[in-house]
Image (cartoon, rainbow, N blue to C red):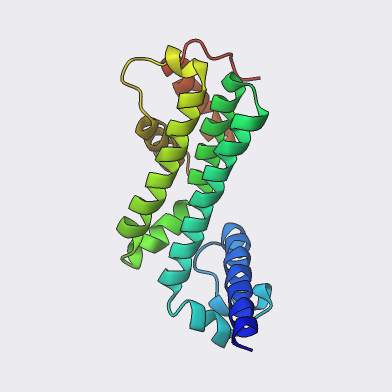
Length: 187
């Protein structure tokens, strides 16, 4: 009986995080936790049993998003030519940074952002490092350009453009043109 209860709890937790990602992306991090519970198909008590505070849930959502980005790098390494993989990665970083602006602010106001950010940022920087190591285009990067620079520029662009993804992608392309002159232009 306990193994079944444990498996149910693991499934419930995963459903809550998945639903929270969708609802938060759509409606923002201030969305009602009851709404997230309904979207996940669980009761409010189940949500609070797994995540006693909004901050705990938001931290897990932020962490799950970082994990998804790391998986995306592995996919790029397998499926894209290296020059287009680098641009696709830069674009994805900007898109995620724009989408997650409200989530980061909510974590900061809850006092969790520095912890969540350092762990999640580390995963994203490591993924960027992995892609740069695979890419011959990385050899043509301007001296001193690091994986941290990619993440910092994407974050900075997200702040500047607010929610304008098209402008964010254009600014990221301008930066890439400057730091990776050997990279083919964006289509």
